[in-house]
Image 1 (tube, protein in one colour):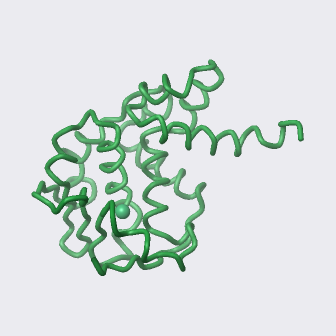
Image 2 (cartoon, helix red, strand yellow):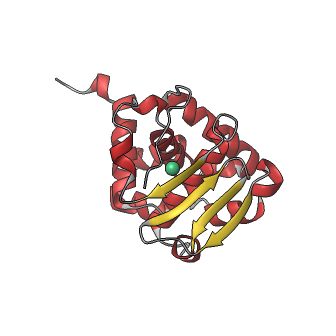
Amino acid sequence: MNEKVIAVSSRSNEQIRLESERVLRNLMPKALEKPIRFPIAEILEFKLKKEYGFDLAVEELPEGVEGYTEMKGRLLVLSESTYCDNDDPRNRFTQAHEFGHVVLHSREITHRLTENLNAIKTYRKDIPPYKDPECQANTFASCILMPEKPFLDLMIENCSTNDIAAIFGVSYTAAKIRREKLEDKFYKKFRPH
Ligand SMILES: [Zn+2]
């Protein structure tokens, strides 16, 4: 595995959130208002080509590789297990992450971006998170699967992180990270020191 992660344009979390909300406004505006399980698999299946000019393919991939995005060939590839088990929160997140590469990076990257569970981290120590395409795609996935307003509404209703994860169809960890980021953004300054 010698694929190097190359820095992309700087993007703040807020810029990525705004981009994700533009996408939702176009594809599924109700997801911006109500907590729903965003149908990422259907979006990839039926909208990717029409809206973004990317084909979706399913391939048998080596162990640990969940998918890749081929920017030049405008192709998003998922492994068989990542594609088939659409209810699995981890697969949903991977699908949304790949979608993030298409939305955010297709104009500035021309090489292949691979999701490899084992290898990827060692190659990007020198890239700050706001220029790292993998961090950006994770932030995008988090925002598209758990939009800010409905997530905050559930927090205000005192929903548990477990319940929130089940509603949005994400893992407990993904919901916890989202919750902490929103707490930092909206509540930190009001917390007693
Ligand atoms: Zn990636």
